[in-house]
Amino acid sequence: MPVYAKNKKAYHDYEILETLEAGLVLDGHEVKAVRNGQMKLSGGYVTFHNEEAYLTNAHISRYKFTGTLEAYDPDKSRKLLLKKSEIAYLSGKSKERGLTIVPLSVYTSGRHIKLQIGVARGKKLYDKREKIKERDLKRQEQIFLKKQH
Image (cartoon, rainbow, N blue to C red; front, top):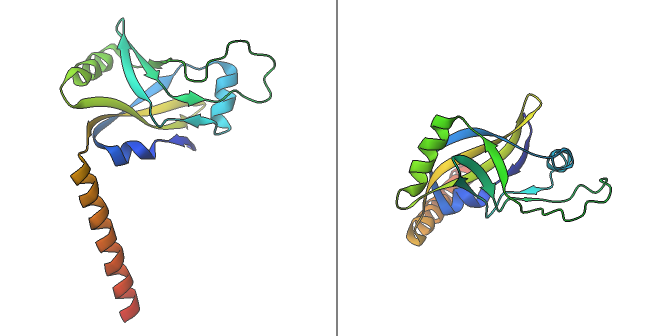
């Protein structure tokens, strides 16, 4: 199960409350581009239109061996494959104040390309600073213990 793209910024900017797996509707050349690692999830989010979920603002570069593609938009919205109950649940969560649905990673499950999405709450600046401070203290503690041995 190789991971083709990861949204590291999401883990930094958001507190992930829960995760779900969704299928992703892609064209053939987009699948090849994703398998080549030409996908960026940073800045992406999930929107809902007509009781369907879409991945918006995720970038899939044009596959270099594709012939002429007129008007190919690498940032177009791509449909997500979810159950109706999951769409209703996520739609409700996205309407709650302070919550958003963000893509976390793209990987394969068998021969299908899957997207891991998360229900997230934005972190405040002081939360981010606190996390960095904890990480630095832990690192210094490890270095100190290593020097003593």
